[in-house]
Image 1 (cartoon, rainbow, N blue to C red):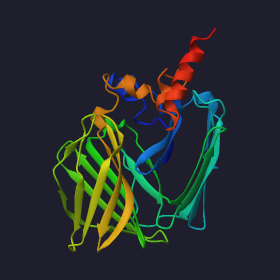
Image 2 (image 1 turned 120 degrees about the vertical axis):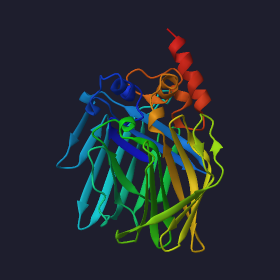
Image 3 (image 1 turned 30 degrees about the horizontal axis):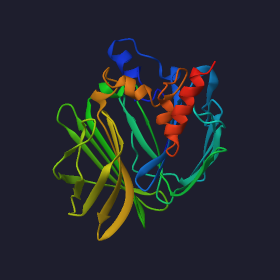
Image 4 (image 1 turned 30 degrees about the vertical axis):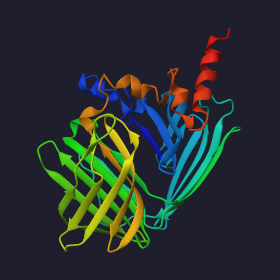
Length: 326
C-alpha cells in the first residue's frame, strides 16, 4: 500500500491546529507512506514527511517529487499508468532504500463519484489493474506483484469537521470483477452505503444496498471496535459476506484488516479500513504517532517502527549507540 499526500489527515498536529482555529495549510505537510504485507503481517513500513522546499507538484504533468522519491501518473486511451521511483534514507539503516513501483489499469468509468464541498472519494483504476514493486537496500530486498487498486481522497475542511462518525472501506479481487465497499456513518445518524462492481474494462455498476448485518463487535488494542463478519445485501437479495482478520494496523483512529469476501459461492481476497475522525490527533495519542514518522526531528524510537520488520531491534540499539558516541 502506498499513499502520497499533502496534508495527510493522520499527520500529528494538523487536526489539533484546526480545532484550535489555527489551521496548517496542507501544502506545508507533504509526505508519503509505504507498507508491505506478507502472511497478514507488515514486513516493511515507512511514513516520510518533508519540508515543502524539498517537494514539488507539477499538476499538468501529474508528477510529484518528495525528497528523492518521484511519483508520476499518466492517463491515456482509457488506461491509467502510475510509476514511483523510491529513494529515501531510513534512520538506523546504513544504505538508502531504493526501488520502483509500476501500476497499470483501466480508467474507471461511470457511475461518477461527484466531489462535494466537504469530501471526495474517487476510485480511479481497478478491475484488471496490476502493480509490481521492488524495494531494496544493501541489507534487504522485497518484491511484490499482483492485482491493484488506485483511488484518491480530498477535502476542503479537516476530516473531523465533515460530519463523519465512522468511515469503513474495503476492496476485493474477485476473478471476474473488483468489488468496492464504502460505508459512511454520519454524526446526524444518516448512513451512506456504496457497493461498486467494476469489471475488467473499468465499467462500474453501483448496487442499491438495503441492509448491512454485523456480528458482535470486538475491541481493538487501542479502543476502536470492529466486526469480524459483515454481510451486505442489495435490493435484489444478493449478499456479500466480508470476513475480517485481526487488525494488521491498529490505532486509536484507524484500523486496517486483511479480509476475504464471499458472494455467489466465490471467495476473494481483499483489505478493509476503518477511520474514526473524532479520534484523530488527540493529545494522549500524539506522541505515539510521532514515533512512526520520519521527518525533520525523528523520534529516538523511530527505528523500532520503520523499515524492514526483521532487524528493527538491532537497528534501534545501533541508532542509540551512535547517538551516545562522541
